[in-house]
Length: 93
Image 1 (cartoon, rainbow, N blue to C red):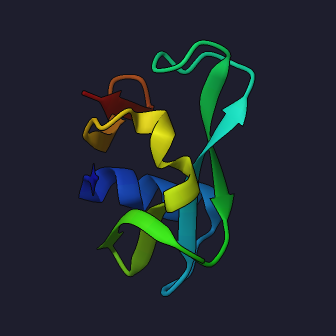
Image 2 (image 1 turned 120 degrees about the vertical axis):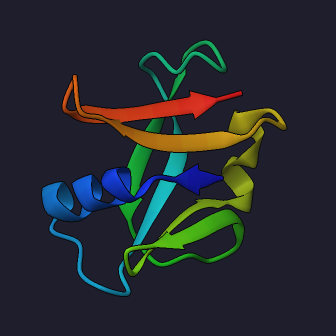
């Protein structure tokens, strides 16, 4: 799992995150995810219980719970910010 500094700063600004906050990435039923049909990626500001992957950037802990690791299907998860689109891009490869 990785996140670029611009992506971390985007989440901090958009979600009004404060230092030592945590942001979870999780699988949810519905939407378009690209990895598993019928599932998509969601976010939740919450404390980790049993993180399967995580990284700290800009004072925020970004993580995936062990229970959601199936969504990534043994692939690397990268989060970056697209200046051109002014939005977050999730790359799972």
